[in-house]
Image (cartoon, rainbow, N blue to C red; front, side, top):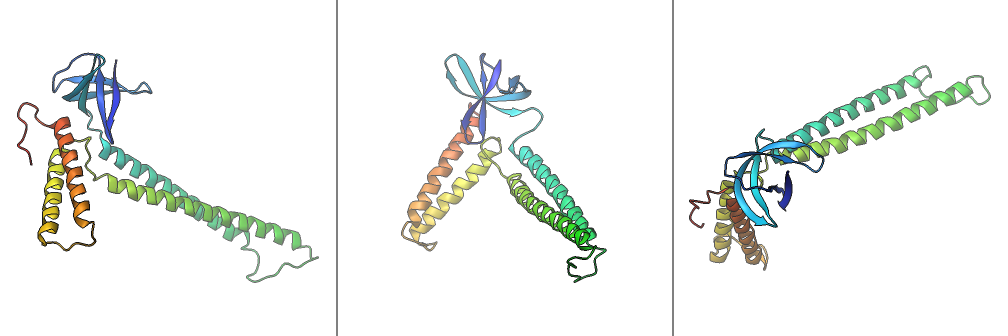
Length: 222
């Protein structure tokens, strides 16, 4: 059985008991027993008799699609919470609509019990309205986050080669610009942090090449 194996943040490899060629389609089984068809890309390493390959889902599902689905889910929850909040607010208003505005509780009057009950019902409904409003705000915040993530490219995608190549060029240019005086240093560690950014971008680019690059005709070093 072919399974998943975590490689680095956002990236899983296909752990296979047999060797496969690039472009071959195999079935991977999740820890929950779900099966997904994937396309094999590069052999990353061999260990304990297993072959570990980079892969893409044949149905096109990836981190961006997952983010879109999450954004839609949280937005649906936010819409539902907003509806419940509005409904509760309407119940709160309706609970006291028969009481004149500003009318105090007439202690000892036959209306005292009904008045207090109506206020209690109104307050409870208003509390529910506020609670659902806060839920809606929380869900909308998460929906916005996942909408932003839907456009994010990471190492789980073949497009990451071009993306991280661009990021590496940007980081190098900024680092050199700080050293030459083209860019103003914001603090004494500006050059150090810029160099760290270059190193991180270089590592991401090399990982992207390992995962998705043409192993027979590798590109020239950036």
